Length: 257
Image 1 (tube, rainbow, N blue to C red):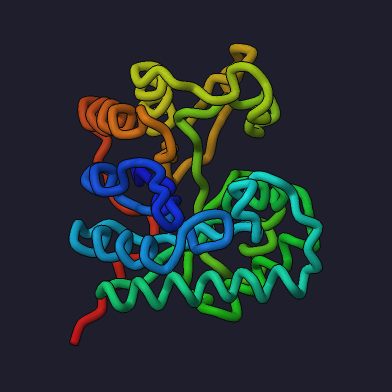
Image 2 (cartoon, one colour):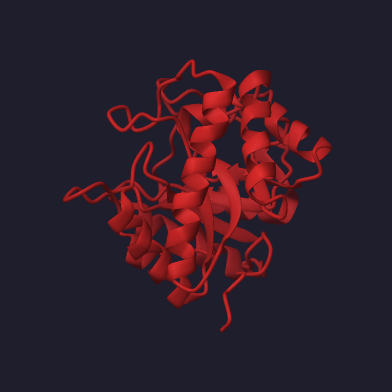
């Protein structure tokens, strides 16, 4: 099972999360590409740390929304969205190459992640960007999302993620952040949910139902003060349950001379 976290989400002098510590725990690092968070210094530093630790680098592409941390819907034209995703992929991949690795997968961030569950035009725009940049890249997202269906039809490698620290509806969607209980904070509870996902392929919904969950990667948030403790608890619980951690995407694609 892969364990991923969103990293590199600082900007300028502002730092968010303990990326260095998390990169000793996770197997995949989804790195902000400068639109919802991140800047060239942060991107390069995060890629170097990931390469040193053998962690796969993924591109966390999002809306151009630094002020809102990418959590607000942007009604951007599809052609513009394609260009903006290409821009983000190229920027992060340049940093990754300089660090001796390559990006191995693509995952949308925040509002874009949720929009692509149903928004067909924006879904096609992101798929077009990935295909144009590198059709060998894996794409990661929520099971059932329109953009993953379109990506699969387009011949892209598709993988699915589940959230150990987010609540789910009975339909398998994430509970909106503004609702009480949408984000979980207890490391022990998050660890139990992660083990359930990895060993049973199920998740317990906010109303107590147990539903099936397709999962290749378990996601934990890296942007809060408990992120490291939560990730350690989850990793240790998975190991105790006999779950081996391994990056879901293509091999680290480390460059050789």
